[in-house]
Image (cartoon, rainbow, N blue to C red; front, side, top):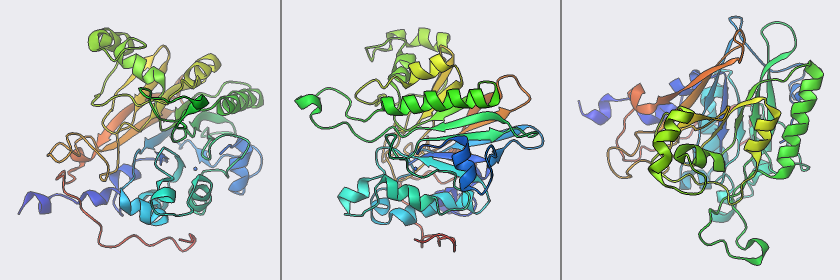
Length: 372
């Protein structure tokens, strides 16, 4: 039997039998708005202080981060269908999930003239029973900012928080009337969002009498992701990397530049000052998988998940080597609650790594309660 037919199709990652999706209790997909704890609870028919996420009876909880699930022109033509194919493994298993946007989510509006801008995408995904994205809030920049509190296994107080921030898409062409040649062309987390995080974090502390530890997810990396790897602030010089590995405990791989926003947003400084964020994880750079502890806050990447995007050494047998997801383990019976993170790669699940595309025979059906 040939190699291609003896291995499971990589489409099993998003159709029916996804081992990656089944592993998680919450999925954060950088691909949906401001949410106070009660906002998410009210949407799910619960009273003030109720939380749709909770630790299990054994005190544990698991988060799986998927990134860059875009699939080229198929996504641009059939946006709703593409989302449905990706989220069904969670939805069909009753696994709670949420999305936060990246720089490609509105591509179809320009490429194919669809009307699926981020606010429309938010309202679409909110039709799914197990989606946790709150509605779009026009008072805060972006459409996918959310605080998701995870209730302790006993009582009605949160033990952990998941923060989602919309890191935007692209910087304007001529900011301040000047060209941006030589600078990164991506967007950044805005001061408005940082104020929202600060205020809601402080409000949550007041409500429950303590800071709630959490992890933060967004798509475009911070400038500090770059600084941590190089052990220097303003050069992409590997001279300081060896010292940085030792200082920050860096593990994982880096195969491309750190494509930050054009402006340093300040989200790292804000989180460090508040003291409740234990890690910040992004996507965007598909073939970077590293993480480390940068002066008290973990900074890292989840690998690119989708097989339709660029990979490692495109066109070769290495192309899909780093396709996968990042898993985060929580245990409420430990002091920090967050106990560690690990990577899962498709190659280790026996998935076919051939560089050729493997189109699905037909798209998955929408659940009866979702209007496609």
